[in-house]
Amino acid sequence: MVAIPSRHKSLFLLIGVVVLQILFLAIQIRRDSQGRLIRVWTVGAVTPFERVGASGVGGIRGIWNHYFALQNAARDNERLNRENAELKLQLNELQNKADEADRLGKLLDFKQTHKTVPMLAARVIASSADSATQTLYLDRGEHDGIRRNMGVITPDGVVGKISETYPNTSQVLLLTDRDSGVGAMLVESHIQSPVGGAGEPLLAMKYVANDDTVAIGQHVVTSGMDRIFPRDLPVGTVAQIKDGNPFKQIRLKPAANLESLEDVIVLLSVQPLDLTKSESKEAKDSGAPIAEVKPVAEAKPIVASKKDPQSKSKTAKP
Image (tube, rainbow, N blue to C red; front, side):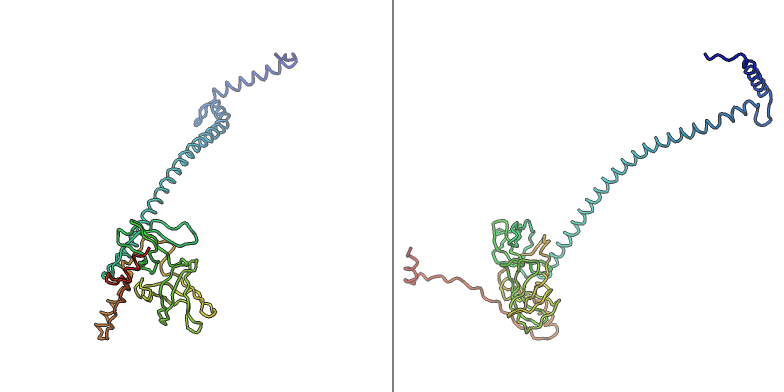
């Protein structure tokens, strides 16, 4: 223990006595509104420390509550994200169902408009993996009456033709394929020219002379001369024109959306189909003469007669 020098003992003793006297006086002295003076001094001395402690405890409590609040917010945010993802999936499903209903509605309207035309609705189930060919596969085949060279369309326009058939499926050669083609004509000028694929999204209209007038935006429809598609089905719209030698280089934008096909219509006949009955009815109502259109007879295979000895002898040879 540190020793206090003797000359300072009387001074410390005096200070202690004075302090005790002041304390006794503070205890005895009373204030009307604030109580005893000692209480006032104590409160005044302790209050700053209480304020500091209270603010520190309040800050710690706020940080603690904020931490748990952040945890709750993180859980709520995760739950809301899950609900948002589920709602997006439901919205996509509803949108897909609405799009499917629109497509099926268009197909039904098309079939109702052309009741006399034999046709069959089919769904696209696959596409060719070979980039050199533009083909699709349908969920209908020979058992459904589909045969080769039958036309495939949508309510928007021509798609292609059946290139191969199987018992329950069939292959469609799209109009954009290099080996595909359709008899077509310009609506405004009635210039007839075949339209085929060029290995690109645009179609090529061939054999149009440089002297013929063709403008951007003109519509091209089927001519019915290929005996696959009926007349006046939309094929495309003129998108590019360049002078060539000896014919113009014309590119068409397909009328049907060939890059996102899901449902199509197969025309169950390889003969030209009469889709002009409504036009004939209107002409009849207006009193205009109606031209009778005779279908082109289907070429039948020549069969050798049994009575022909030459043909019999020819077929008997190995």
